[in-house]
Length: 360
Image: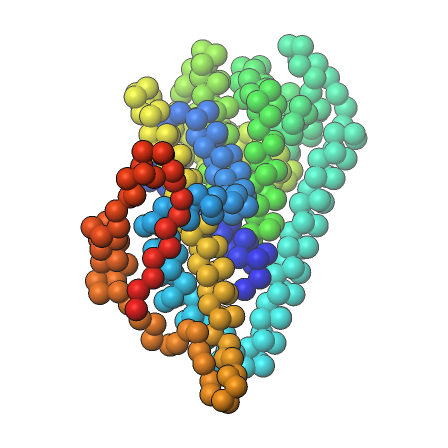
C-alpha cells in the first residue's frame, strides 16, 4: 500500500470517528461557537495527524512497541498474503475505480466552481442599495435572501420592514463571522472524500450550526421568537440560488425552530469539549504505531530472504514460527524486571543507555 493511499485512508477514518464523537457529545448543546471551533478542528486534525511523526517517542514506550510488533506480526502479513492472490482482472477493477474516483472528483469540483462563479456574477450584475447603513445586492422576488462572505443578497420589496431587519441581522452575522469559510472548507472535503458518507454528514452539521449561530444572534437582538419563526416559515417557498452561500432558509426549519426553543446548556457543559484533545492524541499515537509496524514488517521481509551457504544449504534468519518467550512479551517484561539489575556505579554516576536483551 502506497504512502499516499495510507494517508488518505487515515484521513477518512478520522472523519468517521470525529463525526461519531460529535454526535455523541456535542450534538444537543447550545454552545454554537464552541461547536464551530470543534468542527473546524476536526477537519484540521484529520488532515494533519497522519503527517506528524512521534515514532521515536513511541519506540521508548514498551507497551506501544509491543503493540507495533503484534500489528506487524499478525495483521500486515495477512494483508500481504491476500495481495498475492489478486488476479489480473481485479487489478483492472482497481484501476477502473481509480479513474472513477478522479472523474467524480473533477465533476464535483466543476460544480463547485460553477456555483462560485454564479455568485460572483450575481454580485456584479445586481443593483446595490443601503438599508440601515448595510450595503445590499437587490434580488428579484422569486429568490430568497442569502449571503456569501461580505455580500448580502435580498429583495426588500418582498418582505415587511420587521422581516427585513431580522434578515439583515441574520445575514450580517454570517458575513461578520466569516461563515462562508466553513462552508467552503466542508465543500472541498466533500469533493476529495465524496465516497465517505461521514463527510457529507459533517458538512450538514457545519451548515446547521452556522444557521443556529445566526438565528441565536437574531434572538439576542430582542426580536420576538415566535414572530421570527413564523417569518422563517413564510420564506420556505423562496427559490435558493445555490448551495455555497449562507441561505436564510436553506436548512430544515424544524431543526432550527427546535434549537431556538431549546433550553440553554449550562456553562459546565463546555468542559466536555476538552475530551477532543485525548481523542486526537490517541489517533496520533495509533498512526505512529502503525507506521512503526510497517517499517518492522518491511525489515523482517528483507531478512527472510534466503542466503545460500557455501555448502549449498539454505539458512534462514527468520522462520515462519518464530520463537516466543514463555508468557509472551508480558512474560519477557516481567522476567527482565526481576533479573536485570541497574549497575550500582552507573546509578551513582547517573549513566543512562539502552539495554539489548536476547534469549534462545
